[in-house]
Image (cartoon, rainbow, N blue to C red; front, side, top):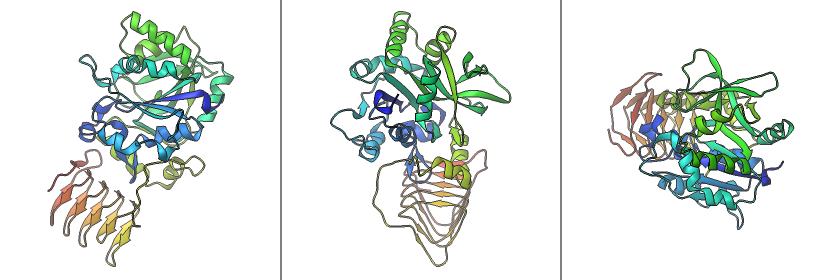
Length: 371
């Protein structure tokens, strides 16, 4: 099996409700992450790195910033005459809400999937962040002669209402599936990367429509665990799943550890993003920067520690930024102290302000807000 025989499907709005502060004006897929990326960059890059040439992105609402970011798919080499990147029409209906409308979404793009010539379909959400060799997933799926393969991680389960939690036997076969159970300790939970044949998907979708099923995880995966050959493929290395602002803050901060950053941004499997030409970051004579990620185009004249500074941010002399995330084109004036804060795009913090949250409860300043 090769990537050219697989069509990728990305749900850009899945789990928007988990971080409403960041998704009020954008999709989950277009949420900024790690200084210069958007969350959709990770599933897109994972797909193209294994040779997938046909990707459909399913939208629902607030997708203007997503359109601006992905454009025609050129940064991912998906600007093509055949195949390439497809931003699929919004599927919002009166009955659709939250993540449980994946079946409704797939019904809305039935014609797109039907016209695809690829034999397999690879699904992904945008709220799980990892970099993996999907060729290994394909080989595993073929070797097991699986009907469905679900990529999973072992750890503390995220608090997601449609999360798939699995039990596996010694041969990696999924023997039991629970949807959003109450759990203690580590479990095997899905990273929402799922591979199956297109013909199987079409059959399962026809059954779902005829029985008026509405929930992909419960009605497509859980209901068929005893009927189909389902296997779990464990993702090694760094992976994070977002279920709240706390987890978003934590996932960014974990990249300040070199081992996590090196695994996620693997030179053998690059993470691509929209190219923005800008000058390198400029550091003033009085600046102090420690254990931070600073993107290009920034002007740093103050003190920065344990923070992620996105493109085009300016931090004036006398300002102190610690344990914080400052998104693109924001401004932090002299005399301001920020600690455990998340500052969205184009925000302005005027002189001599102090904002201090906590590791579990960072303060959030919205897009374009002036304080």
